[in-house]
Length: 211
Length: 211
DNA sequence: CCTACCGATCGGTAGG
DNA sequence: CCTACCGATCGGTAGG
Image 1 (spheres, each protein chain N blue to C red):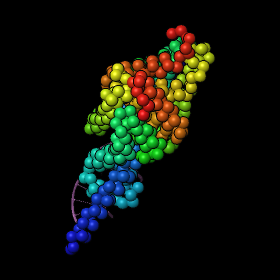
Image 2 (image 1 turned 30 degrees about the vertical axis):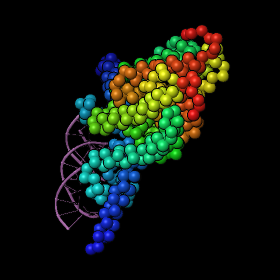
Image 3 (image 1 turned 135 degrees about the vertical axis):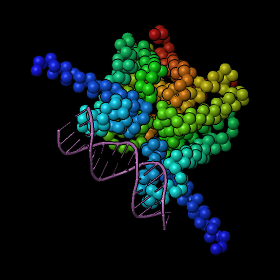
Image 4 (image 1 turned 60 degrees about the horizontal axis):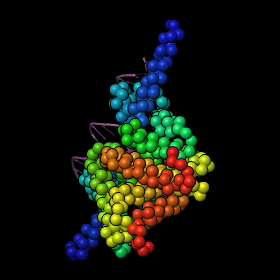
């Protein structure tokens, strides 16, 4: 057997694995991580339940890999493009705008995967609760770091409260996510954009130039 | 059989019915309306599954009555006390403060029942999706009515955008709910209070007295 | 309110 | 990747 054949088969297996996870992120964004069942996935992929199962060995492993796959998608769609902007207020604005665009384009058909996870697991103890906590802290930390950088650069007022700023920006984004998915009304996204612009404007250093 | 005995039995049945719904609202606020099962309820109430079932005739009826029971609790804990304040900005502030207090006191152990419903059903078509839409519109309408009243009284600036104001206030409240339940950190509620105060202050009419 | 059941579906296993 | 199963749980029914 030529090694090329083995390589092809292995990469087919990897591709299938990735394809399963892609469908899994979409199902979980709509139905939740608890609504992600082997039977539902098998049906969507038109394979047997045990065919899906064999790729993961347990439902929990499937759920964990689904979270990791969703993380990569959000990294690619929101975080990386925002961080490719020049640091400071531009990055802060880009982070908000990229998130809103990712919601508006329905990158996940059920809206932001991690907002869904947050709401589903906020009151249920266990591993996923802890992961939702960690995810929230990471997301807040990202915002806080970018905002602190903007403040150090003198683009935001020296006395701006970073945690308060992050709360207010993130509130607008999360709220836009839930209500846009519920109502499919572009006005929701427009209001979030306006709210974000106002929050950042009011946090600006008095003498700073506009980015 | 004296009519008193019949009355007692009927009121026992009613009390049991109400007790089931009370537990149901608590379960659903944590596990979601999909996580509310007859078996779970029966276990919590220490009766048989069919004993619970007999009270409702279908699972959907149980879910519908659970939503109605939660609505009454929110009406009693948030809406009615807020509307008992003098109309205008005082009512608007009271609505926000009553909501935050209701989240902080964990009136529902999983946080605001309708925020949970919104996030659970935002992307799932069906009857509950439509009820979540209707609930959101009612909630927004309540805020918009109180805010418009405040504007007509000259307490808010004549050019204030009511929909934008409601979006920004509600964002702070919803976000406080999800993050408070996730992190149990009082700082979350404090940030929401500060955000709400800022939003209302900036919407004030230039010459209006402080409420 | 109960027991005892129904078919469907759950996660997971055996064996191929 | 498949079929064929396992025990548990789902909503719901029958009969009391």
